Amino acid sequence: MRRVGGDLDVFGISNLLQMLSSAESHGVLTISKGAEKKVIQFLPGGIRLVSGVRRTNPLGEILVRSGILSPERLAEVLDDQRKSGKRLGDHVVDLGIVTRETLDSALREQVAEEIYELFTWTDTSFEFFETLDESAAGEPGPLAGVLLDGNMMSLMIEAARRMDELERIRAVIPDERLIPQQIELPVSFDELGLERRAVEEILPLADGSRSIDRIIEESLYPRFTVLRTLYGLSERGILKIRDQRETEGPVTIIGKRLNPGGEKGGGKILIVSELATFRAALAWFLRNEGYAVVEGQGWDSWAETLCQECVSAVVLDVSMESDDALAVCERLRSLTKIPFIVLSSNASKKAMTNALRSGARCVLLKPLKESVLIARLAELLSPHVSARND
Image 1: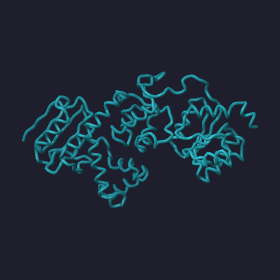
Image 2: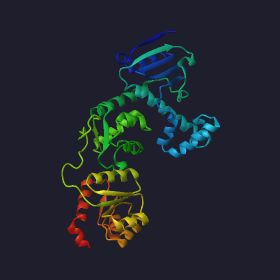
Image 3: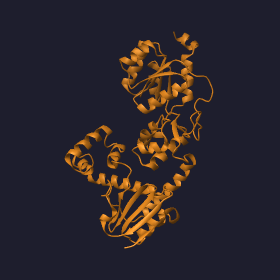
Image 4: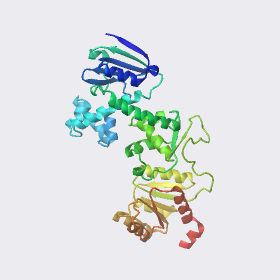
């Protein structure tokens, strides 16, 4: 038996893994960064991640972020699993939630993500202890039962690609203590060119109070995915990123400054949209422009009461191909003289005609240009227009 160790920053993680793989070495590799460490065991049949997973329930998070389970359903499954005494993987397979093949693929992906993270570590040391004794690796973690192919080449190729991408990300996010904050509206998630589920999960966490490292901690997604998503949103002007030490007048590292000068708005706006993230972002934007805002998921008696009592204008995010959407527009027109704007992803002439015939003052297509929305609201709420429409 032999031991070898040293400064990993000098030796290089790629060189180390390639050397151990090429020599068909069998043993336990421990990589440490301060108090944090990962333990990888090299076995005759492949490699396994014995410990070092920061997540308490990586499989549960995989099931949620892939859309297989909702957080509420996961809580129920975990409760049943504890009563059954089975491992979670076996339990979800027995329940028919996933197949064994899907489960194994998801777990291998998670192990690979944990190994990719090693390529981003700095100030690290390593120790390799050559042995065939599986118990020498210590107490197994939640992914220790997953065996990956011992050929490290495919892992290193993907890791190298990620490192190139991470270099670009670091130009925008040089420090994970920085704080991202949403300033623009991701009107169409599908046109962002980013993983939609990741955006929907990560964007609400960028609320101006959480640092990037805290978002990584709270998100269901791996560190690299969080960084890539925040970087992509910053590049598209949806986020600004500031130093956590700046308590006043945060400096935008990348992105657009919101409302640079200009007049503030006025009046109360009702936003109706089934898309919670979009609705909240639009409300935040309008409040920053000086409007009072109330939000509704759908059109109901509560919304009708608001329109009759205290709302100046309505912004409807609806599909004008829907009979329900047409009915909402017509009812809004019949109940009140309050002007309303329709937001739609449908650019067809029929859809736009339906909206205008149903009483909409204008139709704004997604992706939404916020400056156009503000201009239209200002027109609708100006005294001249109000007097003309009475």
